[in-house]
Length: 579
Image 1 (spheres, rainbow, N blue to C red):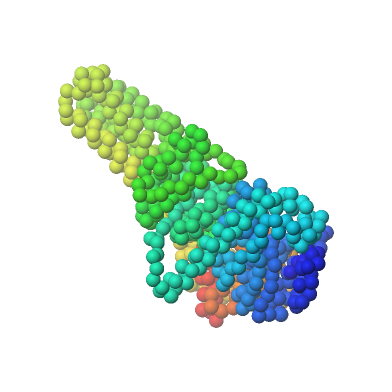
Image 2: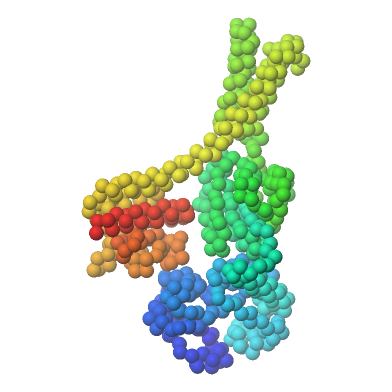
């Protein structure tokens, strides 16, 4: 507990047994944090911990205090703690809009929903401002600044309403869960399913939090969906970081994460919604002329029986270029299509009078088939229509007229359109499936290849070397297998030059001692460069899988994490078999 120099709080705290804080030296500063190991060693029945959303000092075991609390709960220690509404992650955007201040210290709603009991501590704005001025919340020199900036009367009224609504919703969900668990009859609402469609951008996290609030309001199952366009360039490192952070926010808040690949965002959203009985779709609100070209417009037009919610993002807005939002009507697909049609026309004119008109009709079919195979449906239809018009104008009597004397040509022209539609549809489906197949094949091959090679290994060293070799082949970076020695963990296989400095070694050691993944892109000691996964199945840990990207800005995707964890499990099973 940190009293912040408040006499009233210090008087109350003096009546309780306290665990002295741990001191951490960081860049010349001495920081005081809760001594997690001391609390675990003391192992009280109940621990009183203040400021649940607090961010721990750099190089602490966990980034957030609520993660320390999780470790205490897993150890069988009950915890009483406190949190303010501005620190609840799903309310972060609403608080920023009310106060004009973005609160950086937040904790996920899923943690709060796991509490056995939630109590609302409520005072009027006037009483709170009096407590502030009396130094009962902050010391006096900080109180006036807090009153002016954050705790104005208007802000407090809005925050109070936000708190009452949040606690009421949480209590209602607890009541429903209680009734369902005990089979108490009641007027249960029909199951709602919410789909939140996001794209890589700085406001993606806002969308996820707003979607969570909407799902909570309707007691709906919810999913966060993003679509990778096959025709798009690869995401930049910054876009990848935005998207990964938003998907991680969705995971922390308890949502399901779905990542699709396709040619058109609207098609993929609607296809998923129909297959999964989605009743509500939430999308970002387009602006200006983007309303016409955005996939949102097409979803609005084609979504029957589904409620659509449009979210207006706050803060920075990144405009999506038109050519990235719609089937491209002035793109290289169409330029190449026109070139192919012109080439077919030229060849047909040269061959006119040399071959039969029916053969020229086949020649005109070539650009239709080529564009249908390699380009979008719009380009294939353009090729079909342009080829029909060109053939009719130049090669069908009466010449240079759209009039047709031979009605048999209508069947041929209809065939052009059917071929364009069928071939383009099949090709689009194949293009949509191929990247997924390649990704799945790479993951399956990594796991299957490792399993196959492990079956031939007869010594521990062979297992470690096989694991390190497959890690290096799966992702671009430096990888190694670390095993314990009396002096600590050391590289047993893999990259001998793995950057295992003192900091990275301590993170790997923590992962080994606690049996949890640690390092970058995890909830445990994320300040490190590397990612450390315990090699464990049923028995004690055999060692640690260590991996670090060559590019420090690169991020480990959820799929990569699952593959690495599977590889660690396979290696552990092989080692157990030897024992």
